[in-house]
Image 1: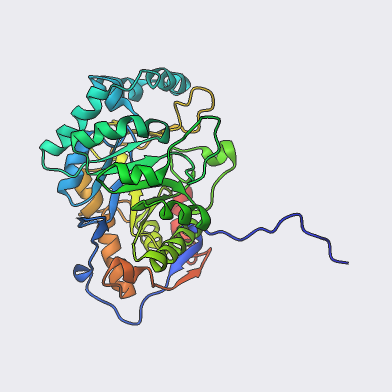
Image 2: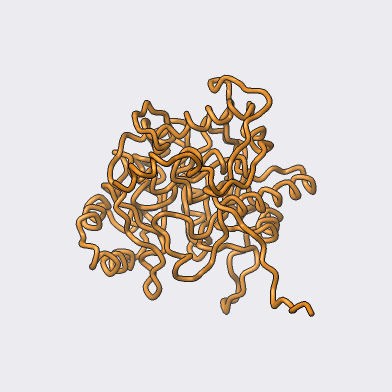
Length: 381
């Protein structure tokens, strides 16, 4: 007699469990087109810097824009709470591990100042850079007019889990369809990991969706809440929603894999899973120009009652330009991410990112260990 199941479970896959299959035709890496389009904006590299205080300040946003990517400034963070954010960032970097969570809770209890929101945006715009800013849903309606007047180019509405339907005791929450009509700029919403939630958000009129719950190096949501879907499966499911929505409307919504990417191979697998761009966090916190001074921390870290992030020491590795474009002498895939993407596209025969979506993938849990005896021994010594 068959035992009835309480519920069915699907197998989900992360970056370390899959591999890309080379194409039947190869191309020169320098012919690969890595352009990323969001609304009417086009970027030469499909890489976004995460809206985290240890990564993006106005100077970092300007530099990223000059290099062809996009950095998202966190408007709920230190840059808009303090006139002199560098002093506060230095205090966080110098705090002992045992006291850093309580320190962050105190620092983030300072109110957001609307004049600083406008000033930070204008600093980026006056340098001729594209300005993307991030807000949590609770602050979006209040600050949307401020960021519009200041001239922001892209709005990212971001929380740990975002859906188009949110049940709350408040009379009227944030309605994404209304927000998209209100602001004259592309709207990216996150974070999401399922087909149904992604499709509903797309139907609300958004232009991009962030995929990933808990995979970031500085995030402990999975440990604290037990919530998350590995990034390959999550990206594929949200990409499927993008295809459904495109067939319904003819509008293409960008899928952006956010978190869990440590090496060039992870980044390449994200695109083969269906991503149009990736958002990098702790990797870019290692840049010499990052404001975190070798540290990064999850934006759920300063929650007053249930912190879900941790400050991680990432160190300072290289300039942002070297992290993105090389040259590099390291062999582990932690620098020259654009070079890794172009080379992978060449090997797989993908001329464009959309061609990369068609690359065959296989389930390969031994892809990083097969034949690597001596590398493993070196790692143990």
